Length: 294
Image (tube, one colour):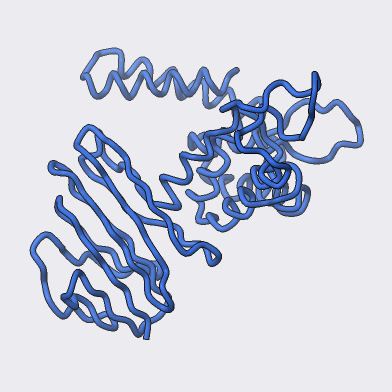
């Protein structure tokens, strides 16, 4: 697969750069050549095309468009066009369902959230109609199946298979919001996506620096966040608020009220307000934030 050829060559180039190896330039040039050839052969009319088995099939392949979007292979002037085609496939052609297998599912939710469409990723994941994870649960599954459809007897490959289990990556990186932004979790971003119909999420991750933990809970009109940042790491936390009238507490101390900094606390540095989020820089330690909307 040409995409994996590019993926692996790009990865080797990054490793060579970190290790300061002379092969870095050669591998980088090789990766660029692969990307150019990939786009020349597959990118046509605003989306990545694949051979069709039926002359009447007009749908695009979600996987074929997710993969280059994930690795930023799409030419900058066409990125929005390709992403729009992917959204059309998900929303219009598939009624907010995925049409991916073991390869594409791994990257679909990441691509949606990277492009500020976490609500669509969440809707796909929680669909109770075929195909989807919610459909499996609705049909009595307690483990992941190897196929999307419910089959019994010899028709089903396996009723206990990790094949499409990569959705758990999205749970950690977006529902809990835990993401490494520099090597070895030396810098961490905590930016949870908070769906309207979930009240509580908790996740922890053992990293090279130590345990990273984030939980959030909605109680009435307030949001409670518990954060743990290990020694040797720094963090940037994004706390969502669509209201301009609020109080943000850390423990028993009010630190921000209605956009005005009230008190500074050691280890917490206000960075900015951006995209309906309060952004703070945190040193290592344990934090309890309480956002009250008035």
